[in-house]
Image (cartoon, rainbow, N blue to C red; front, side, top):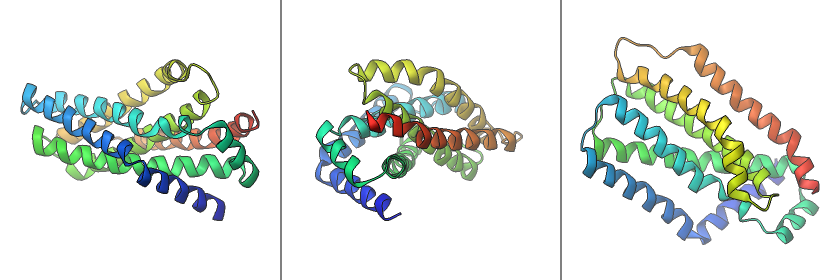
Length: 215
């Protein structure tokens, strides 16, 4: 736990020092939602729901996917000498999860301010937003770890991420659509399925990352 906490502190200090990255994401969120507001004003619930999750996808790519790509080879060699691969990848997963949860809540706030609030069950939708943001951050952190070892980073992430992220987005959209209809309920089995997929990604990262680490 001490190693994980130290690595988390390192990522936090880097994020504070490189503030252009954080503010760049905030600018992206604000500009995108403002453009949608000028184009659509207050869309209906289905359009609102679909646009929100598509925006979440691109926010996650901008906020999370850079986590491994910004680590140089020399820095990775230094981390190899002071920490285990499980500690390193868990620290990345935790930091990116927290970052994505903050961005998800911020984007939800701006969505409701600019594009209206068609939600009938706001509490349940906020819970799904947190769960969805966590799920997206886990997937793209794992993909970034793989892509960082390849020369064509963006291409590798696109090829590997498409069959994984599209079903997850469709599941999130289907679950969250119940929050806009008072007579529909969010199926607990689908929520548990999503949590199980997240746990599987964490387990795969812990098992497979040591092989990338040794490279």
